[in-house]
Amino acid sequence: MKLFIFGLGYTAGFYAAQAVAHFDQVTGTTRAPQGEAIGRVRMLPFDGAAEAVDARLRRALQEADALLVSAGPDAMGDPVLRRLEAEIAAAPRLKKIVYLSTIGVYGDHGGHWIDESAEARPSNARSRTRLEVEAQWLALGARAGKPVYVLRLSGIYGPGRNVLVKLREGTAKRLVKPGQVFNRIHVADIASAIDACLLSDTPAGIYNVTDDEPAPPQDVVLYAAILLGVAPPPEQDFVAAELTPMARSFYGENKRVSNMRMKADLGVELAFPTFREGIAALAAQGEGR
Image (tube, rainbow, N blue to C red; front, side):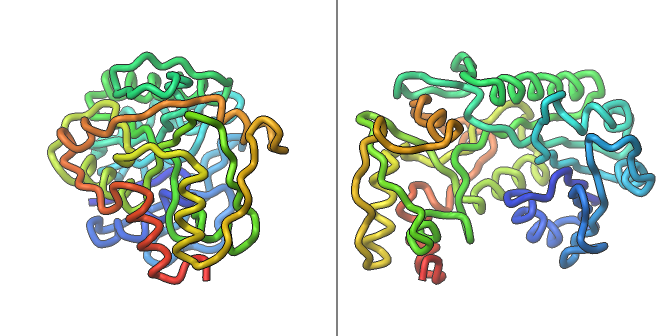
């Protein structure tokens, strides 16, 4: 089997490194590859703003059995659909499509528990575009008879991208907004969810890919500091803190996101069900030292 990946960023790059064990060929894209391959992952250029699409990319799509889309939308929508929607729909060997989205499409739910049946009410243009793109991928799958899995990811962390690293670099903040919680997900558990979609007979549709325990962000920073044996940064009142507009917008959304459908229908067993297991494992691997 052959896997094609649009957008070889942090999450898709992590998945690609292990997907070579399951697929005969893995091809990924970046806007300007630094070489022809990263390990065993073949690299091709793709830029949604460019006038032309590389002929090698078109051929690889025709040969792909599975497609993972991790390239985010731009101001004009989804760059992959804009350039290649018809070719993806007609790809003769393509059997499954996974689109990586975000729980940001739900917007604010006042800290209540929600699942995939909850109303999506995105609070900013970025999340509204995501929701529109989700619908476009699902519609493509329905027209072409190809199962499409939309994975709504919570806050991603893992090797090299975590609170332990931020503590080491001195950029961690312990912001306090009463009642605020966030869900998180370790990148390895995202990989397990993608595997469940692409490598097993599971129902297509929308899935929340998130941990079991939405938690206040200041608690996560404190836990990580204790593991490293360092003093945690002082607590800061969210209202008075200096934040970028994007960072402040994250705190405007408060929800507890359920992963029960992911567990029941995809059969995913989380290796890191809460931030404690995930951060402890990263610390044991030397992160933050």
